[in-house]
Amino acid sequence: MPADPLDAAKRLAAEKAAEIVRPGMRLGLGTGSTAKHFVDCVGEKVKGGMPLICVPTSEATRAQAAALNIPLTSLDETPELDATVDGTDEFDPQLRLIKGGGGALLREKIVASASKRLIVITDRTKQNTRLGRFPLPIEVVPFGLEATRRKIESAAARVGCHGALTLRRVKAGPVFVTDNGNYILDAAFGVIPDPEGLALALAVLPGVVEHGLFLGLASAIVIADADGVEIKGDLR
Ligand code: 5RP
Image (cartoon, rainbow, N blue to C red; front, side, top):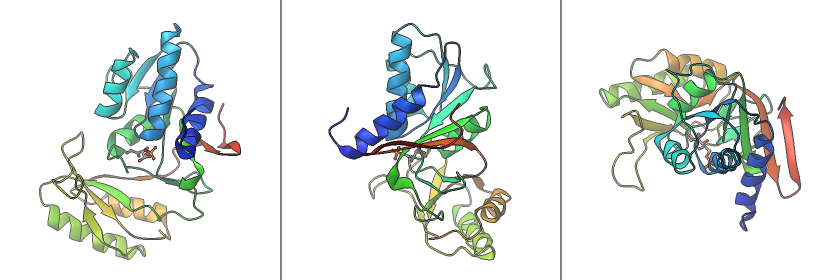
């Protein structure tokens, strides 16, 4: 178990989620420091001889999984998955999520949507009663960036969301580019009064590829802290 308590909680959540993995499963592999632990758990199962086939949600996860000899496929070859296990940046009591802190939200949402179940693994710090503490990542195409930014501002304002939209950079250096060749605007809205309304408002904007609101996708959230593991939703 990792010495750092936060990392230990992430590992614990990952190990709990790994209990649902059965031979022959088609699995989506999430992205981020929590999902990384789950990929390690899957690697151990593969090493032990369990047949599995997996779809990674990012190039980073693909590299990790390949190094662990986890058999990989694509959604073109395997368009339906049994489950995806992924981390989150924030979650609320209705199992709604903000994701995309690692910049993989588009592939994460496509893979989660192709899965019968999305199981979220997290430490307790990501819990919130209302979404919005974590700036909402919005993936946009580079073309027309300023025009798209303004459209986002006015669409968000119509559903009660106001706040700075910051172009994501790599450590205050070059612009962060997603695995899909796009940019990310991080929207510091604070509390989002109507996540469903905001999701719809963003989805129709040209130039917006995807946003980090994951609504109605998570079937279970595995939350770990120093006291152990709590499960919200249905892990089976
Ligand atoms: C990546 C994500 C991650 O799941 C999210 O950022 C959580 O990451 P971590 O487990 O490192 O806190 O959405 O796009």
